Length: 369
Image 1 (cartoon, rainbow, N blue to C red):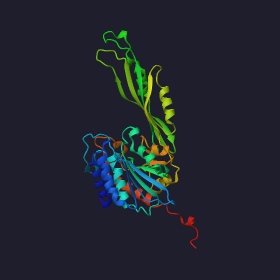
Image 2: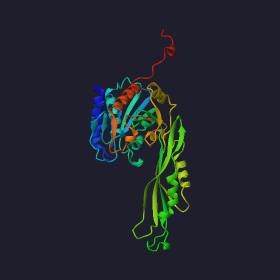
Image 3: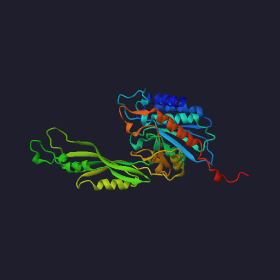
Image 4: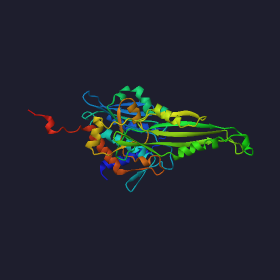
């Protein structure tokens, strides 16, 4: 294991070993700020709550690139501490996304901020794993409006070294069937709300993922019943049965269109209430900086089969992609891990991408004299 790779493993392990469940990222934010302070000057270190921003020097002839990652994790499942085994680094958040944060910290240390090909900003933010109204990045945009003037944002979400374009939108709706309560020994005097919902449940159980091609990648739209609650006693016919339906929709649909589509699937007489909705992220494969990242470094392109904060940048007109060392399928797993080799690969690619522009072919340079 080389020096850089070993340092990336050490950094990731340190980050894993600092608990940072959503809403409790304070200690990790302090560690990150301490690591970044050495870059000031020429950079500015900015804080807002548990959000930390390192903003490099600005030069008007350079594009602006943001690297961003969330500090928080889901609750632990006996996996709080890091451990290295057979080339895999285990621990809560190892893939989602403390390995990405470690790459950012090492890049902040190694990048020549004055000579880089872009005006660079690194953003470490809180509360991505919970509802959008608590999201730290959402809080940062009105406080630092220049974030929305960025040319490209790279979210170091788990992508297993591929570039994942755009992201799915997500809609949660509460659908409620109403019945009439009665004693369970005399059910004919009531109406069982759970039984009333059976045809609706059967329909959703039969739905298959729907493929949608956008910008050279393919998303899979899904409908899932994720929670169900009803009944108030073991001897009472239930007069209410409520379901949460989660709809993941492709960037070809607006949130309003997604809501209308799901609502049209609800049987007459059922109640329909939107719990929350987050927009999808636009696919920007044709953006010059995205093309450069994909082609110069020979990276695989895929659709982001999840919601990420590329959507928040896209909503503000900023091209954004997901690219990180974590493995998507490892996110939120009890045995969550990241391959050590992924750390070095993403570090090398991003260092080359943010520090040097594509070389100009000799035929395009013209005569030197």
